[in-house]
Amino acid sequence: GENVEQHPSTLSVQEGDSAVIKCTYSDSASNYFPWYKQELGKRPQLIIDIRSNVGEKKDQRIAVTLNKTAKHFSLHITETQPEDSAVYFCAALIQGAQKLVFGQGTRLTINP
Amino acid sequence: ETGVTQSPTHLIKTRGQQVTLRCSSQSGHNTVSWYQQALGQGPQFIFQYYREEENGRGNFPPRFSGLQFPNYSSELNVNALELDDSALYLCASSPLKTGNTGELFFGEGSRLTVL
Image (cartoon, rainbow over all chains, first blue to last red; front, side):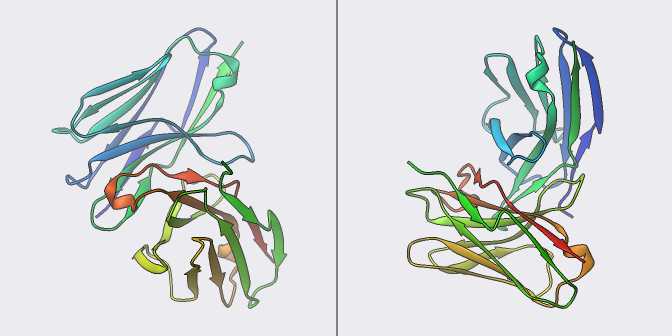
């Protein structure tokens, strides 16, 4: 079935350290993998995405890697700052079904 | 350029009632998707509308229905409300059908509480 597993569910890191969140997906036909950041009471906001024709994408302190063979993709945040504290969701596009399937979310806390 | 707007932002209903949630898509976007986000969980796909027709549906019962209008705005209707329908309902618009890997732009959501 269509499934996206996300780990860890909670993550606490010291300010300035790196954070890594990992996801696996089940639909081998998926070809689009966005990451969303959701602050308390706010909408999910797209922070970075990757398509299956590349293995890595970087945008300043944020990077995403994709391993299509293993059906893994990961979010990497370097030099973390307090404003990075939020819930992060990965997602995978289910081809033909016109929908994104989301992971369960990771609550990231940056400790000053 | 205006973003995705949803109304109402909060509402309280009782079991068995019906609710209509509204969404105006971002300017230039012709595709609208609806997601349900229960507390502490990721968004779950309800359905998508493209050119006024349902274009994909998730695992939700028929009492969840929708419409898209010629101006691309959309409504989500839920009949016979149940306690488990309490959630944040998110509307997302895209310039393309999601199947064409257009990115989604979410509204702030409508928080529904069913008592």
